[in-house]
Length: 208
Image 1: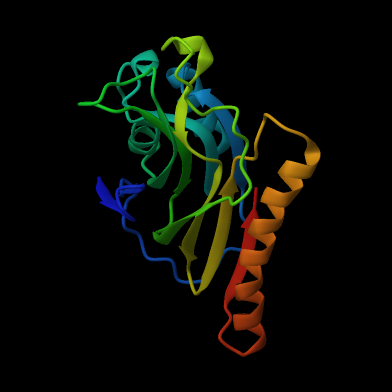
Image 2: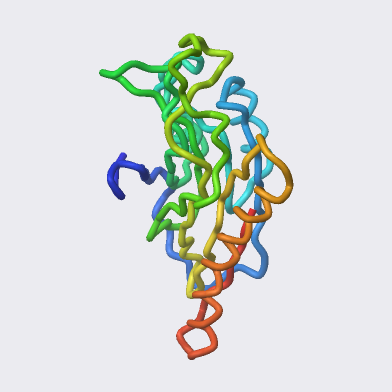
């Protein structure tokens, strides 16, 4: 596992290194909020049966007590023999310690090489998850540090690049907040349209 972007992104490579001679005619994509990875064996079994080229997962635990301190994204990628990128969304204050912090976030997996991972931390956030001095430090309150985000990753599929936006919009708040967060992804994606219009394309995008 490699870390980058101030340790906010981890990457790993478990897919066999096979040459891709031409871009695929279609891509099979699975997008799934896996609820921390609590039912890991069932998640892996389902994903293996889907034979997806690209998997976008939300709510993947990293070093949390509730999921046996596993790196859920890495475990799934290893068992499926895929490459992965994991982006930290929140530090879960009730699931780790100061010496061994716990996180959860998004993971993007593919059989093709992954590159240029980055995080868009949304400017518009709910204050619901922030820790407060008068609240007890117990699991049901889910006190956290961080914020909702999109994990952006390039997937190198032959001579073309798929740019994926793996995002987790706010569950606490109204549709206006979620639309503002979604718009940040759409604004960011316009950079690729500009590149394509100037002749440096070979890319197409997918957002979930």
